[in-house]
Length: 200
Ligand SMILES: Nc1nc2c(c(=O)[nH]1)N[C@H]1C(S)=C(S)[C@@H](COP(=O)(O)O)O[C@H]1N2
Ligand SMILES: [Mo]
Image (tube, rainbow, N blue to C red; front, side, top):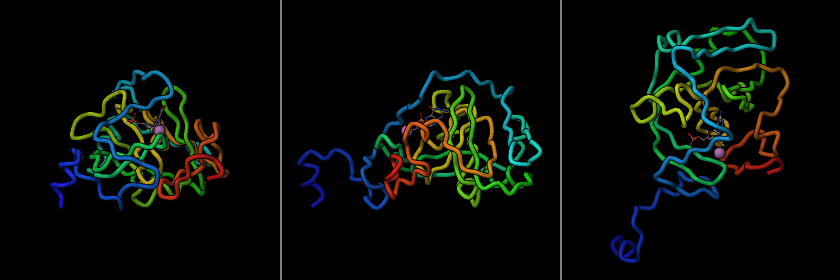
């Protein structure tokens, strides 16, 4: 009986275990995880550039990005340090829309951020309705510590792939590790296969 569980000290309803990847716990909070200080990025000065791998570079300003159709997304996110947060809601532009105007056969991308952070992803994981450039969290402008004004959101991979303060994508024919991947984190980072570290 449900009240018996509550009586024994379960304060919150258990999350649906089918939504929590192996080794993760659900947190109601929103931890901040940054490898360095929060850079100052002013929305009006922000640009997003796609370049590399035989592509003529394309740059969007904040205004150009905001003029593109935005969507609201509610997804679960999973950090490799083992917290998961369910039903996070974001507003942003699908990378499909941005990459639509980029002519490339590159199979990989390295997302790069203000401050020097990088992370690598296959192009197939940035397209097909799986990745967004988001500028709102929970209906409010994205806070600087969470990557505002604009971060990448790739919720089907561990959250280190969702580069905060993202400034662009470097397209690559060959896969190359980013910041955490070079420190021994898994190249791909699928939380459902628990791909935390290289070799997992
Ligand atoms: N630019 C940048 N992006 C980043 C990071 C970072 O240190 N720098 N940390 C990553 C990690 S490890 C995680 S778990 C998430 C944390 O996002 P949050 O601080 O909004 O929870 O951002 C990812 N994106
Ligand atoms: Mo993380």
